[in-house]
Length: 255
Image (cartoon, rainbow, N blue to C red; front, top):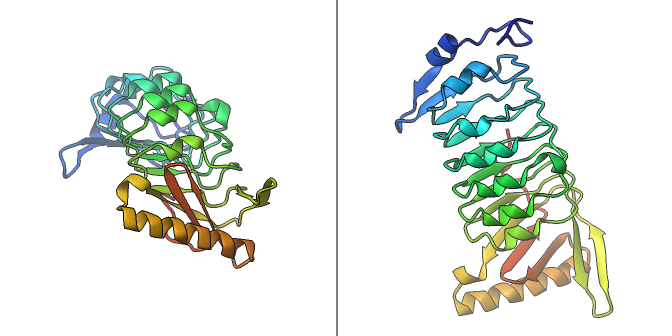
């Protein structure tokens, strides 16, 4: 196959890539090469490292170049719906990223580098529709993260770091084999969670004293009702109150 060609015979030359760059309403340089049947990352793109947004979604890309971190200007990177099995460590050099979409690939936990924790400006991280059962503990450093997509993976418990990310408000964990634990004074009883489940996070620091007392009381009520098999469950753990309801809303960052 000629250099730069995808499965459909699309040749991505430097000239073609330059023509695909558009200015967004907010003045960002966006390069879109989505749904072109690309089986590999076009090497010519490494000469366009000044783009702010890069969309390579809906292709057949199996591997990213080790020097993906050279795109120092990137603020937005969309790689969803490819065939990626791992992410290079150099992705940690993209410190300006605010949005990263890696959903619908073939990633397992071993394929996620610890350097993802260096992306401290991330506001949105989508890892849904992969084969993940754990995340790098370094993600605890993502203090600006607001939205986290973990839907359609293999998680049996929520990552611990979500409890300390102060700006995290939306976590989509739908269709994971999540379990929850409740204490009865003698031990812990673990049960499998319902397949459709959303988690809403409320930080204690964001509540007044009266509201905090009411919220904790509500959590206790939810736990009691859950034990009675009414389909509503809750828990209060540390500095984060987790409320789990069998109620759906539009999937977070689902494509």
